[in-house]
Length: 116
Image 1: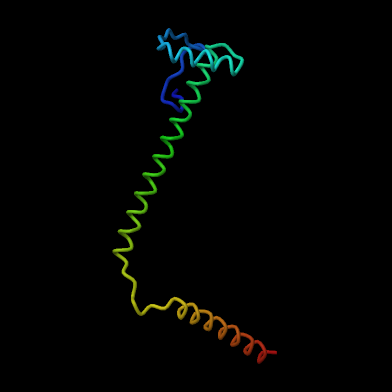
Image 2: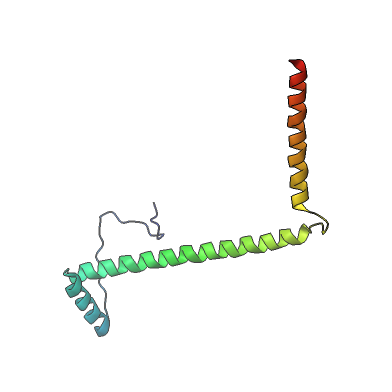
């Protein structure tokens, strides 16, 4: 079973890590823990979790952006293949269908009136 981050979970609910932090990063972790009023380990857990979530969201946004670009390129190709007729008038076509439907309705009413 893989998590959304592609990492298989271990047997337990947590895993111990021994890490070395540069002095400046350790100071930041200590400050963050004080601000959040949690242990340094909890502050680091939250920071790692937030950073992983941020990267995941950025990757999803990047993937979405690439998919949009690909779709746009495909649409441009389709538009090149389908060259519109310069004499085509969409409003005229719509009017023709509308008028045809109106005539059919009128004819239907006339025939219905003749039958009665």
